[in-house]
Length: 201
Image 1 (cartoon, rainbow, N blue to C red):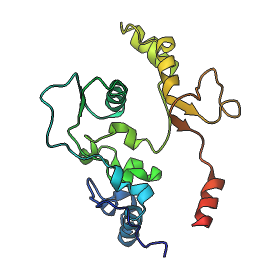
Image 2: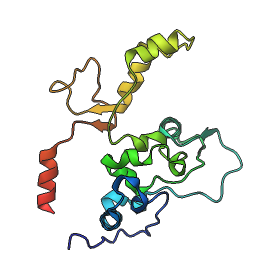
Image 3: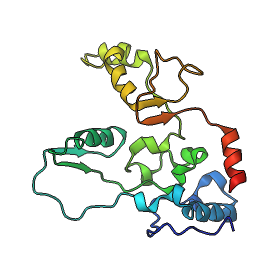
């Protein structure tokens, strides 16, 4: 049966606000209960075995202490830890993101919600799976003119290219402004593939 939960091999621990209490579908309590149960029962969505757990015991010394496990902090800690001689610790005041943010159309439900202000992944969990970055003028006209040396568009762009793995260069986007070398796959939503996946399950 499609609603039967899968055995993920790890305990499912719900943290943060529930979809059941979401204002996005007020009046549809039963639907939200079913949706929440369905999402938790799909290992590929809830990923209970990949959720980050708090560490009780820590080292006495670290080479780098990164504060904040948002978008930037997570990347900085990840890049530093690529050098295995470094001891890196990443500190975050909040816990894992609530399951509801994994449903792209529900991301606005959690805006201005104090329960998700401090979370692992930071604001990257509230983007509805949309990829976006600052405009050229944000860097050149705002930051550089304010005295931020090294933050012009031309200086920042190579680092953006290192993260972006655009699958549609040449067909939809210009390679002058986008990159296909990074680990973050980016492409438009394929409704055809979604329908095929639904039919196969």
